[in-house]
Amino acid sequence: MNDIVSGLTQAVRLIATLDANLVEISLRSLQVTLSATVIASALGLPLGAWLAVSRFRLRRVVIATLNALMGLPPVVVGLIVYVMLSRSGPLGVLGLLFTPTAMIIAQVIIITPIIASIAHQAIRELWADYHDLLISLHTTRAQRVATLLWDSRRALLTASLAGFGRAIGEVGAIMIVGGNIDHATRVLTTAIALETAKGDFAMALALGFVLIGLALAINLALHVLSGTERGSRW
Amino acid sequence: MVTNLLPLRITDLELRRAGRRILGPISLTLEGRGITVVLGPNGSGKTSLLRAMHGLERLSAGRIDWACGEAVARARQAFVFQTPILMRRSVLDCIAYPLVLDGVGRRAARAAARAMADSVGLTGVALDAPASVLSGGERQKMALARALIRQPQILFLDEPCANLDNASTREIETVLLRESARGVRIVMSTHNVGQARRLADEIVFLFAGRLHEAAPAREFFAGPATPEARAHIAGDLPT
Ligand SMILES: Nc1ncnc2c1ncn2[C@@H]1O[C@H](COP(=O)(O)OP(=O)(O)O)[C@@H](O)[C@H]1O
Ligand SMILES: [Mg+2]
Image (cartoon, rainbow over all chains, first blue to last red; front, side, top):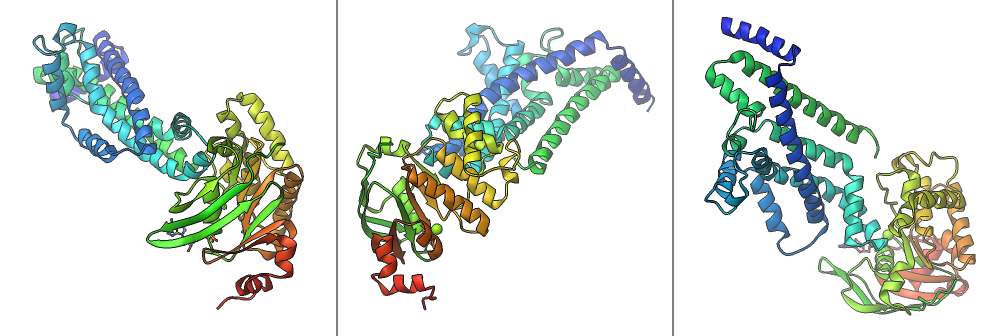
């Protein structure tokens, strides 16, 4: 009990004084996950839109695969990325293992299916509404995709935020491919795991508060966005 | 305006859906001028025929041939759906959308949309508000403005005044007559005999998916060719 109380007070102090180590780790977490979210969105949003407006023979297979990939355990993603990037692996020459880039790659693999799947859902609904109009107006496939992406932008932002939320709290994959190296690949979740194991509850709790704060901020943003989606008449 | 898309020749057209023939066989030629009203009771196949002409339906049999190439014909026609399709945009951006597709700059497109909103009588509404705030009549006018903004040579309208009050109906009819006078070829459906009398140069009467008569309006109303057409004009309820 004493440990927890003193840990809490120290955690508050670490945050209040903007402890250098804490700030560094938090910023790295944000940098890795924001990069992963941007890349995964750039891949997943158009993929979702394309799946919504295209008809091809393997469409159902691709959608089923996407849904299956959503359930992929992050630890396994980490393992696969590790094998690919390890010195003897096919991409070993790039020397990416235990770098933030490797962590971004793992997170992109984890959240792209989530973003694509949510986007697909939203855009399919909009496509059902717009279908006759866009066909009647003689639009090209690219124009359709662009129109649908633009007009469902709120839902798409929601998809990206959901991906961000999933990635920022993920620990298994980035622990494996990043290695949790101090001043190099240590991020919020891996640092919490380490500090807890070391028994440094103050640092672990401080990191935990920052992580919770970020997650809450994301959830709040999601709530506001989906609220306005329903509330407004767009 | 050169209407070299016409005549439109429909030959032995048939639409089958869910194992049932819902339209046809229909053979029909649309000539170059005026307002053609596709008349018939609900379920007679009016919507299906218009959509087929516009290229929105897969034909089960027969052909539809424009006087010019298919691609050219498609680009020069517009369609107003019975239930206006609202985009998640402002009224003005909805109307401007076809121009934006054509690569017109946003500013110019919105200026043209403003003028077009005015010209169809879409006045007194906030053009920057979401399209979804519009009333039924205003939505039809928005859809009409959007359809006209590319200056189509052929305008299809599917029951444009169903569910509208008299004032809105009259305003839309006025716009249609004006556009027709300017040379826009209009093909529209209605189940409303009064509207057909007011607007039609030519009547295409459908009943149960069959073409009963295609004739100049005056001729059709003076002496309808089939008992079903006679009953429909008289306002009798078929048994
Ligand atoms: N996709 C479809 N599948 C099955 N039946 C259809 C389909 N589209 C239209 N129908 C049927 O075809 C008939 C004609 O419909 P429609 O063209 O909408 O008539 P109208 O516009 O004159 O009311 C109706 O009985 C309708 O139920
Ligand atoms: Mg109809």
